[in-house]
Image (cartoon, rainbow over all chains, first blue to last red; front, side):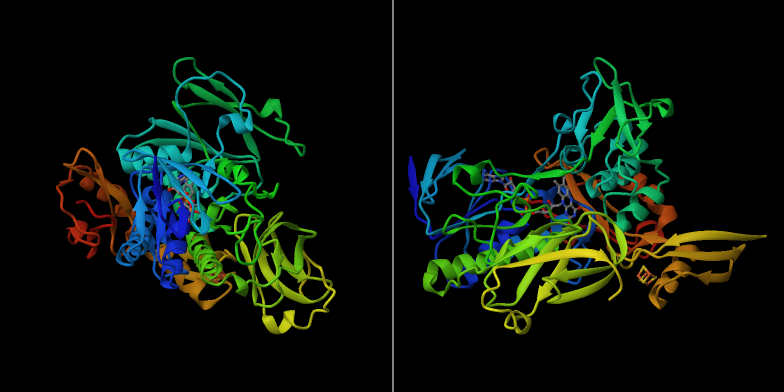
Length: 419
Length: 120
Ligand SMILES: Cc1cc2nc3c(=O)[nH]c(=O)nc-3n(C[C@H](O)[C@H](O)[C@H](O)COP(=O)(O)OP(=O)(O)OC[C@H]3O[C@@H](n4cnc5c(N)ncnc54)[C@H](O)[C@@H]3O)c2cc1C
Ligand code: SF4
């Protein structure tokens, strides 16, 4: 058993973790360690070889590995210590970490602060209850992405993709370019789940048959997938059986959503938000456990990695403040509540003493809406909103100063309107 | 004979469905665009649609069998498949630096294929 010394331990070396560590180190925290269970740094970006990253952060159109490289090089230059092939197994509410490493065995750490940046994992077949047989050939889109982009083999020759999230669409293009036939993309909602750019450049460009308001109702084959049956759904999401059609294929890819990875957070006594599946955090990205912060997909699933990096930096700078001068922390006085049309808001509480940056998602796509904070405290007209595109609303400090002292809660809503 | 095309603009989240009417190669009218940038995009998409190709190249390193690459500029959409076939026959050996040109002026497009990872 090895006891490692550290002021700050970051768990997960994806974009959130690396950005957080850089920021904390730059602010003067001495001993910063990033712990990563994989054999390389960069998290999921490593396998996202397509472009579209960094438009906000670097004002440049980069691929995932290039985006990650910029941060990793910077982290190495600053002398941040990386523990690769090291998996955090347990965190106590007192910030004691137990991890296991390939090289050193069990490692114990007791840092002054922790940043959780474990990312998310994909929902699998079990999570969505697809009926039918259990043959080989059913993968999540992210696993297929790893096969094709990192390990060098294709998952099959004729593929049906269930779900139209970004990873699914990106894989539809990638597989088509590699000579695989993508027979269909099947989406239960009446609209595509991912970004419009991906719909055009991955689906339309390659004429991939898109079945909206459809789902997979049967999987055929015993050894290997032989076909799937899809059907249209009615208003209550029940399949309309007379619309059934069988599509021959050898592979079914699932792109049906991501779940924040929070088994560790629960062990530390951190409260999770039932809507996001991630820790409830305040405006400093601190969880309910003192000294434990969180950032990135572990908190809520992001569509753009740029925001993951910004969130990581926020957690990193606040963790640095916590370590260096605990007294500076303002009290969180105002709860933020998701009102009509809003699915969730991060953070859940703000101090009212600083400009507040809110990230949120709407419940359904719409045009011409007004996002309202409080009764009529702040309003913003938006020409278009979509559940797949995260909304960012900033409440300036000058506005917050106008709030009455006794204000304990602000409800945020998104309703139809122009003003 | 005129032909109607619908071009979805991807430049901003509004995703305007731009209508373009053409006669052969000639553009007759463009409508339903939300801004000037979108109009230019529609013209480009009609005349010469281009995309950045991102893919992988085989390596001689068994622990890292693939190197991720991209074209440093967009290339004609029509050439994507041909470019894939060309790259399928390539193999690269370490070391490769990130940003290093792997194939220059690929298929005479004026665009280079560059590494987006390093291979040590
Ligand atoms: C398959 C897939 C494809 C995606 N494609 C895109 C895309 O094209 N564009 C885009 O903008 N976003 C994409 N996303 C979203 C993407 O996840 C985020 O943009 C970004 O990678 C999130 O960063 P992160 O640092 O929060 O998490 P991650 O990148 O997931 O990093 C988390 C890291 O934590 C490590 N970890 C987890 N648990 C432990 C533990 N107990 N101990 C040690 N280490 C641990 C993991 O190994 C991982 O390296 C994709 C997501 C998925 C799942
Ligand atoms: S035309 Fe202009 S407003 Fe419309 S989607 Fe394109 S960039 Fe946006």
